[in-house]
Length: 321
Image (cartoon, rainbow, N blue to C red; front, side, top):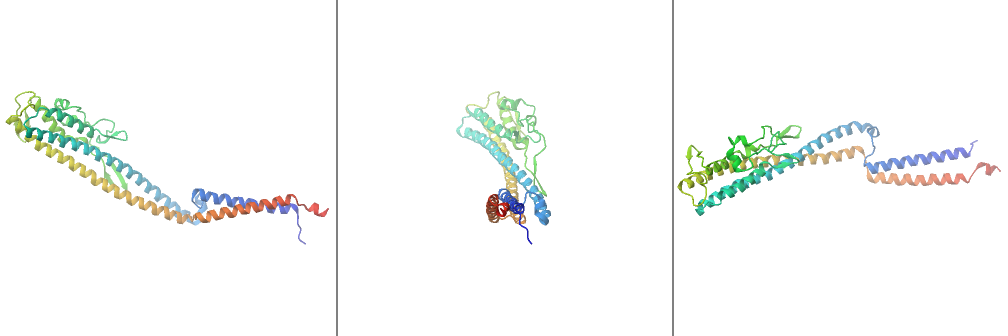
């Protein structure tokens, strides 16, 4: 004989309700997290593979972060080097125009402006640190603020405060690229030409390529240039060409590193997308199935609630009475 009791009916209905609520909660967690489980124990045998994939993804994202940081620095360096090159070519054009016009009255003023342009490039900053300072990112690498300061310095090298430590970035497991440049390497030759220009203007003899150019006195670079001044300026044009070529070479080197970093970043991002798909496949998460499970659990909750509500108005005591 099968016994039927009110307590048993209540207990059965409550268990069904609790089970439906658990299923609904699990389905909602899967929808919110887009994962089949919130911890590795929920993946069973696939936990080991997921752990390995997660570790690989973490390393890959580290390389992506380092690559993005390096790319931003290289882009800032490209802009700064372009500014330096524009200052050097602008100075060269000012000298050539003065020789062609037979009047160099405003030459030193123009050179001073172009020198400031170069200084702003050499002392360019990125994320609060000087780009070309080497390991000394907190100190301006080019210290001579004007051409007068430059000429007063004991040497061109003494006007640079950078050290020899160049920035390096690891863009993948086996590749460490040099992404940093030094102000003394980029701007040293250009600065030397400007220093000679100011020294000549101050009345100091200047040696270029083994030839000594002696000014007639202070303030020589003005008005209509004589034969000696033209010879000096012509020699300086050649020096500017060489120095500007050096800046171009450094800019090209920066561009090559940019391409290398960009290629590595694209590869890492593709791998990251592939890893995301693999992890999703291993996790077994199906958005449509999770939504279906949630809806089915909600229907079960409603059904269990209705049964419990019906039992409240139904009692075996009432039937026995």
